[in-house]
Image (cartoon, rainbow over all chains, first blue to last red; front, top):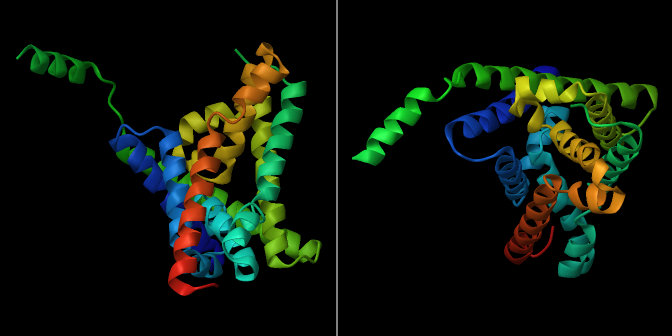
Length: 116
Length: 147
């Protein structure tokens, strides 16, 4: 059942992005930034956490989860150290994703040439 | 009057976009990536005995690795052209933008090329993600006084 929810949620977010891309003049850069902000805003009252519990990985795959993980890590640290903790924790949960993306991108740029 | 004519002329030469079709393809491909993510989470938690939060980190790294590798091999650009937001909105789009920028600007050198251009697209995601996360976190701390 969780597979169906994953499919529906990830598909719905992607379709929403495609509809925005086709019907406005926004570029993919605008849309991904917008979705990250939406993901972060949904976590003010733990709405995105609820979605993750019910939908599983389907909610973790779209870029909205990037915003959710940023604010979530910040809030965990903020419970100990307040506003300074918020700054300390923002990258806690996304560090693995950002590090791996940077690392793989650099390693592959060493070995592969652009295709013309 | 001339501007109206010009607009009409431009509109008649615009390629017809199949918006409905694009949306359905994005839905199917995006959903497929979500299902693959869920399968990977269950695979890792079953075979490596990880908690579900650790398994989801492994899943994200796996997807980023696959997207970077396929971009480097040259397949992913065509897939993105086909699926559009179905592959841009999932985390694969983030990895794709970084790897393709890194490889494309390689000929301009590793500092001024790869280093300076790698975050061209991913940088906006990180910038607005961090700023909005901080502002929204601030709001939450003020409203609810903690977690």
